[in-house]
Structure formats: C-alpha cells, structure tokens
Image (cartoon, rainbow, N blue to C red):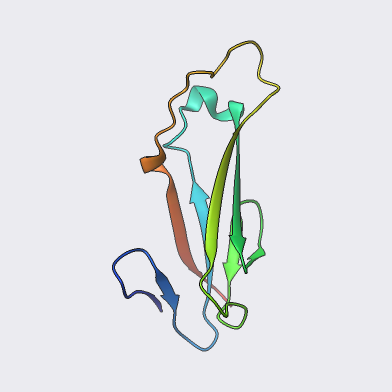
Length: 102
C-alpha cells in the first residue's frame, strides 16, 4: 500500500515487498514550443535511478526520509534569445508515485 498519512504528500510504503516508481512530469509546466530549450533532471537522495527521471523505491533500501530534487536547466546551446522570457509554471509540475511489480 502507498499511504499519505499526513495529508501533505509525505508517502509511506507499507508492505513486505512493495516497490514504487517515483517519476516527474513537466509537460504541462513548460510550453511545448520550448520543450527542447530546457533539460529536466530528477534526483532522489537515498534511492537508485531506474531510468531517466525515474527512481524505484524499495522499503529495504529506504531507511530515512527521501529528498527529491528537480532541476530545470536552460539549454545554453539555444540560439539567440529563444526562450529567454519563457514562463515555466511550477505549479503544473507533477510527481507521480506508482506501485511497481516487485
């Protein structure tokens, strides 16, 4: 089971062999015309990467609260002033926690 016991998005994995994938989606946050002007990197302290911007969470590996950090970087190779004033709506960034088959 995945439990949000605090109501704040602080999730708890409950089960003997439960695993979950933590991913991030910025599709709605960055205008599609500027999607190639930014790179997105998710890191989760205390967890192991399981693909691009995906971390597999396993109770046996998690001994303390995890910290997820999302970094959006402007692509320095972007020509001229393209995307300089692009608005990114951070409220539309979504973190997804999905139960995975273990």
